[in-house]
Image (tube, rainbow, N blue to C red; front, side):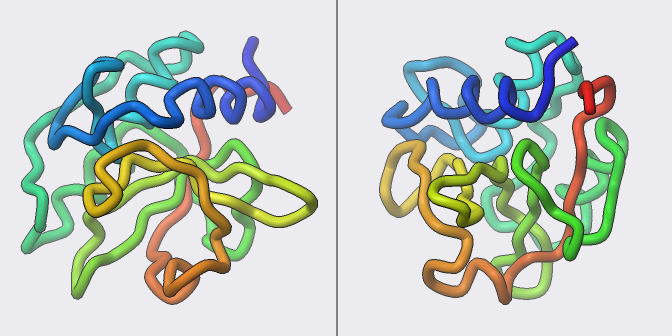
Length: 141
């Protein structure tokens, strides 16, 4: 059974993969695609949907995560969890929480950087944009 370290290690294998809206391969992946591909690789979930827009105008993006994962308070986020962020009013971005040197990071497909990258959660305005946190079902520990 996979654990949190396995989630982070698998997510990091996606670093540098080009960004592609609704992509699900190493030739191109978006933020939700990173989460989906990590879950599939570790046998945690086969749930996937492409029924979302790049800029959402509803809570549809959030609903898909609620169907596939266990929600928890944002304040209890830990490495190996999945965090959702809002752009304006609605959630539209996801990332896997990592950790480097005792600081939380986010591993995510980033449209503006055109690739999957890892950056500090405290960088920029990510902390202010957090709206939901999820844990993979079937994760050890």
